[in-house]
Every structure is written in structure tokens, then in C-alpha cells.
Length: 327
Image (cartoon, rainbow, N blue to C red; front, top):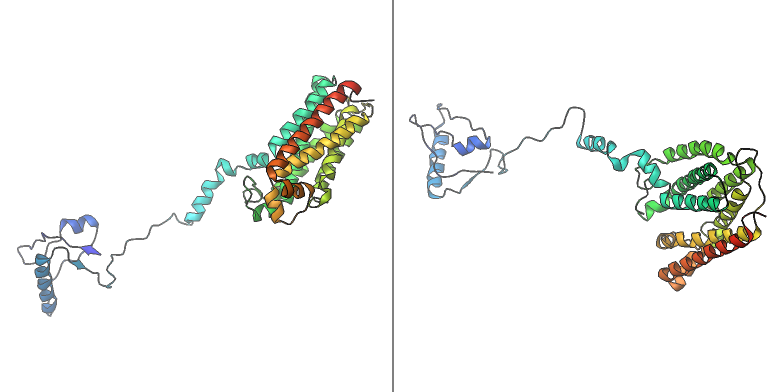
């Protein structure tokens, strides 16, 4: 709606001159033209001017009677829309960069910590620097595969519970891309694993396969801990049978170390489960950490799981010093 202000001028010919305010606003007003039969319109103009002199704030509506002046709609470049422009910007966003999303999906904290721990044990057992480097890289790749597979399997659950930091669940990373990464990583893992011996390599590949099975079998019930126990129990064998070169043959691990490694895996399972108890309960899961958490509370469960894990690590150190890793 255009508001006419006091101070409208009349030209020498009797015609109205557009106010500067109307010109600045970009509102086009046609110059009146004196034609025969326009007397009613001229009389209406004179009455309007009289009213304006009495009340300068009177409103004048447009021809359609809507009381508003149509403004030109904003235009976008030909062949594109606002959504297209936003999507184009998103493709160049670091938050949507596929390599970074793949790294985030590997569960990097768990992967790095596991690799460093296994590498540290290899150092304590007297393995050479090049062997330790290969072992760390092997475990990193294996953990990345497990993290990718876990996020693909949990995609629907993470979507339903709106879990943060899950690129596959929130649609930033396509599940097909993750499967491609898993297959490619497998072909990287295979030569890495057998570099320290075929037997050792097969054992580690088996531990990764067990971890992937654990993502889909018995995961929601009482036996959810089985894959953690078995996969961790295989790590001492991977180290004890390893050496340098594909033909390297070692010795079987000490039974005490294998059992303690399995118990450590169960402790890690409990620690990892604490952070997802709410979402897992909403999904109807009944695994052991959830049952204990509902009875004693998540905070106490976290404290007990931490204490349990620390005790197992100490026992591993004690038995490792006394008996060694291999028989």
C-alpha cells in the first residue's frame, strides 16, 4: 500500500506532478491525460486532494483493491533453483566430503586405541620396528572395516533414534559407498596381514570376520558378548604366531593370556554399550549390559565396567611378565 504524504504539487498546466517519494520507491504512475469524458475521474482526483490536505496519512489502494503494490519476484539463474544452489554449496562443504565421512564412520577412537595397544604388546614381546609398523597398520585397517560394517548394519536404528555423528544414518554418506570401502579395504588388509606370516594373517582375518558376524548375530540378546570375547582372544595368537615374511611360523600363545584377552573383550563390550543403552532399549534389545544398566543404573555400570577392564589389563601385564606371550 502506498502512503501519500503532504506536499503534492500541481504543475502549471493543471496536471499533477509525481512526488519525489513515489519516484524513489520505483512506483510508476501514468501521467493523466485530458480526454473527453474524464470529468468524473477529475472530480474524484480533486476530492482526493482535498482529503489529503485534511489528512496527509490517508491510504490509497491499488487498482485491484488489495492495498499492496506487487513487487517483482526474485529470480534465480536459468535452469537452477534455490535448492539446487544450496546443494551445489553442500557438495563443496568439508562436512560432506566423502573421505572425511568415511574416516568418521571407522569409529576412529576405538580403531586407533586398539591398534596402538596391539602394537605396544608387539613392542614388549621384542618384535622389530618394521613388524610393529605392519601390525599397527593391519589392526587399523581391520578396525576400520568393523566400524564401517557396524554403521551400515545400524543405519535404521541410528535413524530412528537420531544418533549424532552417523553419516550413513543422516544421509550424508551412501551405504553403497561404505560397502565399496569395505571391499577395497579387504584387499588392503589381506597382504598386510600375511606379511607377518600366513598363519598369523589368517588368524587376524578370522578375528575380523568374527567381529562382522557379531554385528548381525546374537547382538541384541544375552550372548551379545560372544564376538567380542572370541575376536579379542584371537589377538594373542595373531602376535605369537607372527614373524617377518609370509613363511614365518611362531608358537601358540599362553592359555592364560588368551583367556584374559577374551575377558578384556567382554569388558570393552560393556564399556562401549553404556553410551547406547537408551537407543538399544527403545529398539527392544535385551543384551546383558542393558539388563545390568536397568538394574544398577548407567553410571554405576560405567564405573564397574571401567574397574573390571582395568583389573583385566593389570592381570594381562602380570601374566605376561610371568609367562610371556608364547609357550
